[in-house]
Amino acid sequence: MNIQERDKIAVWHPFTQMKTAPLPIAIVKGEGAYFFDDKGKRYIDGIASWWVNIHGHSHPYLAKKISEQLITLEHAIFSGFTHEPAVQLAERLLKRLPGNQSKIFYSDNGSTAVEVALKMAFQYWSNKDIPKTKVIAFENAYHGDTFGGMSVGARNAFNMPFSKLLFDVITIPVPVKGKENVCLEAMKSTLLNNDISSFIFEPIVQGAGGMIMYQAEVLDQLIEQCRNKNVITIADEVMTGFGRTGKFFACDHLKHQPDIFCMSKGLTGGVMALGATSCSEFIYEAFLSDDKMKTFFHGHSYTANATACSAAIASMDLFDKPETFENIERIITEHKQFAETIRSHKALIEVRQSGTILAFEVKTQEKTHYLNSLAEYISEFFIELGIILRPLGNVIYILPPYCISNDDLQYVYKAVKEFLDDVNRE
Ligand SMILES: Cc1ncc(COP(=O)(O)O)c(C=O)c1O
Image (cartoon, rainbow, N blue to C red; front, side):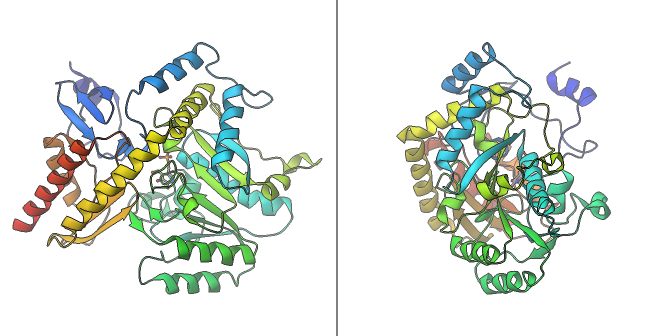
């Protein structure tokens, strides 16, 4: 039996209707921006493997650093113990984060980084004996698949079976172009309630919601409003962090900095599972007490896994080299040029760009965004051409590893144009 047949017998895949889904492609090798399948076909990884990959697949420097760590200390319990990779990574993240961030709390993926942030915010108020339990979130948000993450995310087909089990959240409109004032007003009236604990948001780009983009200036005003009302602000940088929007963090586009940051995905260069939640000193201090009940009782077996931390440190080393941001700038310029040539295409509703993320919203008859039938057709079209572009419903987007070459970008753009021409002819 080949890998796919064995997979069919033993494995259950994420976000996949196992009854009807075609057999998965068996990847046997990764190199730079490419994957190779078991039949030797090459694919350009146009979406950085669910937005995680930064410097390219099977990067020799990351591999070397990780293997050195593996034979020194692979993992250790992190309650009552510590190690160099966890401490060094925290120090280096704090150097990159805005000055108001003072501590790093580790977990092991994006959803848990969010879960930790929400629990920190809830318990902050509980420790102070102030009854603030409500959360504000944007409509159309995605913050992960755990119950806390689903609760603060948009209610849709993906979490419908659990809808009655999710906690109540106050949603405000996303401040996309033309909706800025509606959003600011909604925030203002919501903040008249005295029981708001926190406001969580994906800064300037909502990823899973369809690469919806909005301006940093409005977010600045929203954060300022929250600050004036003592509401904790949480930036979910799980997707936007590590250069995606053109700056190290999306919040680097802001003047006002949030109180908590959630990080994962690109944190390890896309090599290993790791989550990190940073917070401001005032939050940390609310947990310092002689009363044991004020402790932050949260942790995971693999919290601060030493090997994952070493991968993240190695990725930070590569970020310190000028090439990484030169590549980011190069991708931004290429994207901009292509966006201009395609903007008025008849098959498109809109082209959006934020840094290295370029999104194309395709016209469609169907109202549903997530389960849009166009999605499967789009995936197949690009796979045929050796490109992995897994759309979000009718939104095609390119979010590449930063090592992708200009030739490969041009090949992907050409394929996008062909796809749009095809759709337009139908
Ligand atoms: C903004 C945001 N937050 C949280 C998550 C959840 O991360 P993970 O899939 O690692 O649990 C995602 C994943 O796509 C995300 O985009």
